[in-house]
Each structure stands twice: as structure tokens, then as C-alpha cells.
Amino acid sequence: MGLSTITGLAIVIMGVSGSGKSTVAESLANAIGCKFVEADDFHPPSNKEKMKSGFPLSDSDRIPWLESLRDAIKENIEHGHNVTLSCSALQKRYREILRSADCDYKPGNYSLCKVKFVCLEAPVEILMERMERRSEEGSHFMPSRLLQSQLDLLQLEKDEAIIRVDATMGLESISEFIIDLLNRNWNL
Ligand SMILES: *[C@@H]1O[C@H](CO)[C@@H](O)[C@H](O)[C@H]1NC(C)=O
Ligand SMILES: *[C@@H]1O[C@H](CO)[C@@H](O)[C@H](O)[C@H]1NC(C)=O
Image (cartoon, rainbow, N blue to C red; front, side, top):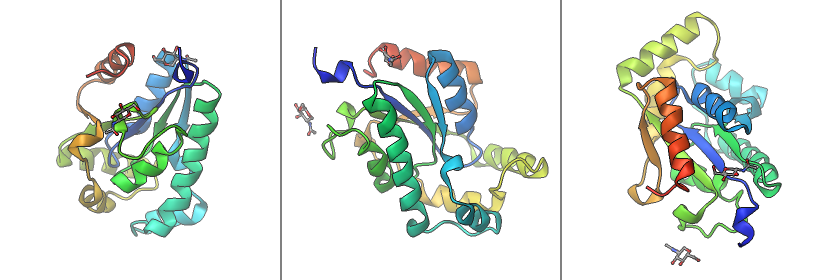
């Protein structure tokens, strides 16, 4: 078999704040026995401060952050490790940076790319409610008023082979669904 059998896969759980990315990515990593990377942990303090103050990040804030995530993915897949990542990855150009972690990736050849995307989707009222709960608990730096700016940025192109999942399903069902996809070699 070719080289592709010895490289790992990266599964990026993407979506806006409140969609449950971190919970799903971590639980999936535990279920399949691989590493979990939390994209929020890669933000420099300046990015976190900016979001905390209610300002959306600009591309010049985001790009170096995405590049450091790409390097983290690359490090894993090149060593044959699978990895899950929770990352908003709202725009195609951001996802292309993450896809470039796969050195065999040819831009546009999404289905062969070893960086896979699963987008968690939920109605805006549910997202808002989850974010408000988290900010009351003081457990997250993203104010709920930034949700709209994230929803405005979210772009999913049909041909990009992004798996869309209903984030209101239970955690277990979501994990099972993704594991099933993995077992079928990501064939839809
Ligand atoms: C993707 O790569 C495969 C294998 O190299 C090739 O057969 C296919 O035509 C490519 N598809 C696109 C859309 O580039
Ligand atoms: C990575 O995931 C694929 C697909 O589930 C699996 O076939 C492979 O064995 C996994 N690799 C490792 C190192 O666990």
C-alpha cells in the first residue's frame, strides 16, 4: 500500500462558538485513542483579550494562529498519529491553511486530503443559550454578542466535502456518527 496508509488523519470539529466543538473533539479523541488539540489554546493572549472585549478577530490575528494549528496537525499526521482538533475554521481560506498540513494535498482535491472537517450546526437560539450559560460560569472568553459575527463568517461550500452534523444530537450519537465515517474510510 502507498504512503497514505502510514500517515494519520486529522479530524477538525468546526463550527461557531457554542456548537460544542471542544466537547465533541475531546470525546472523539478518547473514543478512537488519539490526541486532541484545542485550537483556543493556541491563541496568543492578545487574541483572547480582543475577543473578551467583544471585538472579532481580524485576518491578521487569525492567520498566524491557524498556521500554528497547521503545524500541530502536521506534526501528528506526519508521524502517523491521528488527531482531533476543535477549531471554528469558519471560512474556506482558513480551512485551506489547515489542509496544507497534509503535504500531499492539492488545493481543491478535498476528498483526498488527510485533514477532514465536521461542522456542528445548531439553531441560533440554542447556541446563544449555551454561550450565555458559559459566560455566566466564567468558563469561556467568547462573549455571546460575538456569535453573530461568527455566523456571518461561516461559509460552507458544497464541494468541500464537509460533513454537517446536527449539534443538538447527544454527544454519544455525534461520536458514533463520526466513528462510523472513519470506519468507512470517510466514504459518504
Ligand atoms: C484528486 O486526486 C486524484 C488522485 O491523484 C485524481 O484522480 C483526481 O482527479 C483529483 N481530483 C481533483 C478534483 O483534482
Ligand atoms: C487512524 O484512523 C484510521 C481510520 O479510523 C485507522 O485506520 C488508523 O488505524 C488510525 N491510526 C492510528 C495510528 O491509530
